[in-house]
Amino acid sequence: MKSHKSAVVIIPPESLWEPIQRLRRRYDRKVRRWMPHITLLYPFRPPELLPEALERLRHCCALQRPFRIALRQFELFRHGRSSFTVWLRPEPAAPLQALQQALEACFPDCTEQSSYPGGFVPHLSVGQFRGEAQAAERFRADLQREWEPIEFQVDSIAAIVRGDPPEDVFVPVTTIALGDA
Image (tube, rainbow, N blue to C red; front, side):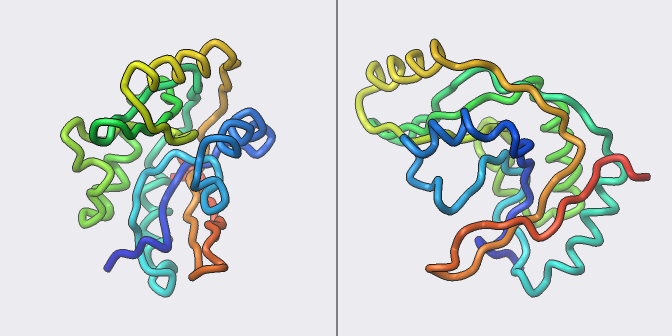
């Protein structure tokens, strides 16, 4: 069983949120519901089934090692002719892809993030853009010119949940350390 009321994500340290949130407050219609994050598994388990799932997550995470990533480059996902998601590319991608693969192996029914034609693409969304491709590219380039890269250690993942409106803001229920084996 899966639910859109829970997810497994990487949350940057809160001390680094402001530059990301400044963009998200301006351009992301989902800023109220989601904290800055990199999605690993979504949808995940219904909140009432999380205790069992968290034990499996702890076991999977114990076998993973912490790593550093940087958010340097803005990219665009295109959705149809005139709709785009603007996102930051975490670098290097390989440890994030390996972590997501390991978690998906523990939860083989949670393949939504890897089922895209290009597979799992680690990303941190900062907003949406509507318009022609050239305008979207100019928007991306403008954001890039002003951006100061952010780096942080990924040493844990978070399980997050939300309720029904108006209580539909995701909140962490737990963080799980990587490499506790």
